[in-house]
Image 1 (cartoon, rainbow, N blue to C red):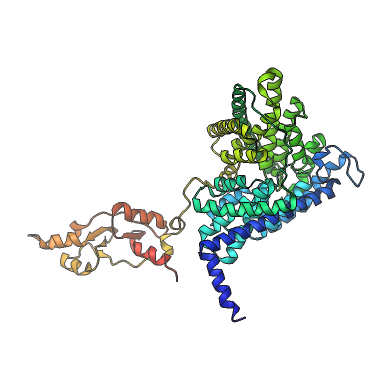
Image 2 (image 1 turned 120 degrees about the vertical axis):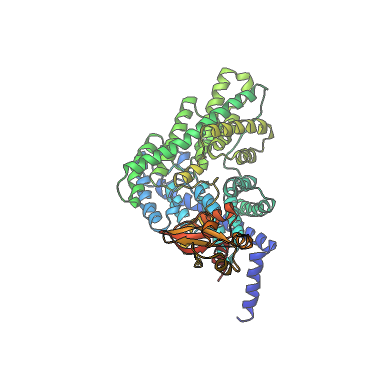
Length: 571
């Protein structure tokens, strides 16, 4: 063991500090996230089988329970039972696992150095699987992003990497989650860079690519390489069709902002109405969700089969609009009662319903220029997601990777850009940052500094040598030896400072004053309760070596930059 210990230490140092080590860590995060995505999807399938008797109830909406033989009324109970299971789980072990997950990852990267507790991965996986399996109308992408991010953070913590590498490993996990879930590694990479890291540095890009590709390979080896949608061929038959896609982009921007506002309005309503214990809230609120599922069973779970039918043109316009509204309400209610799941897939669902409705309407009015309505559904998916999430590059790539149809790239880009622009005009926040701002976190504001959270009293500020106003200049000169200036006080308290230069000039003059009273210069002061950043700002603004720390008119210390450096120095 004594021989292995030095080798292990050297290996850990290499992983922690070298670019090769970072590459290995990114690879490991990709492997873990890919395996986590496979396990998570399998867990959802198992729990959906338990709750409904089918692998995906949205494929046979309104059917009786598959093996209990109960009629369609069983959907009233499934959200209640699942809520009674995941409610206490989340409340007791990891409250950050509640909700859609991506904002928690964003704030961990931006404000907490990429630190996410290891237990979040396990709790999020189980809670989200229970939510979706029990009928919650949310997506699996948000949870797997948080699961992958937690795995990346845990690995970084074990190796004890630097903070910038820790944040990068979190982004690697997020990218791997999207890549493994959608079979879309490029979209996973851009999602991590555009939303999680909010940075496109070349070094970060390379590591995130490694993780996303690895996770995607793991996912494909187990789940296959087929996309989650079966798509027909699409074309853009006429130049005027681009105008229709542009109009869809404008509508999608409005719908994306509307979806965001409905989501948080319902959450606020649930907060105001509910007065019981938080762990019971998902179970009690599950009854309302059950009633909605009874009325519109297509809302059960993620709903990819329903989304696919919308893209394939199997629904009438009126029913598509019903699905659009129902999905927005069902997702908002699931999140509002405390469910755990993502909003990525629901935004794609809403966009597909909107796009299919626009495409079918346009085909009825001008059949010669529209082409397949499914093309509008695909563009609508990307445009609504872009309007809600403010991630236009991810939105374009996710649909392009799903279809591989280059003929859609121009209308896709036009609709996404217009949707994003409309969203920016109507709302300050995206569906992700709105949740953080409601908690008082503004990712666009500079992060609070170390100095902003500390008081002057918390530093080892040296005591001040205070001169009396009646001190003769010669005596003041002796006291100022080695100092640029010193504070001056009289019986009433602090007056200001006297500088070595002022005393020297007075002593060299034709008439030496009897005291330093007339040599005192006014200076701003700080207090023991004042913040360090404010005191540092005084040093910088007035270009002075020190600031008097004054309490009740009495000088109790002399604040300098050296006191701050001493506090920052490792001990």
